[in-house]
Length: 166
Image 1 (cartoon, rainbow, N blue to C red):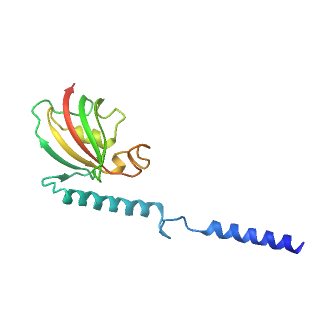
Image 2: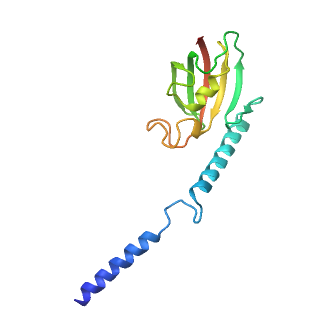
Image 3: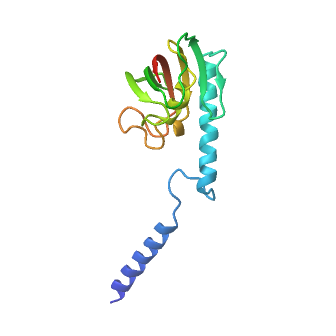
């Protein structure tokens, strides 16, 4: 009987200790909002470092935290929300590894593409080429794409607007 009580006591002690343990990798005392603020600040620094290391002179940060640099000016129609557009994209992680290249037709503001892409394409002219750095929360988000894009990864898009249909 004494061994049984001692065993039960040890199990209770182990369970009690396990419940109080801090999850691995989390700073004690930080709530979810503070953790997200810290992550966003780190990601902003990562994007700034990418801009500096790649000497992207003339690149501009917008109010969404995206960086854009027009590479080749366009001469055709200007894309606006609600327009159907055909665009080409080459996607990279910030370590410059390629994620993929594709051509797509979407309705700006309505199609299910990265939110940052809607904003990046809006305002482009047909024929324009643009480099865009999109923070993770406007790209593939928390989960990534479960294939080539890891969770919480900012992305670089090299875009070319092919056609605007109204």
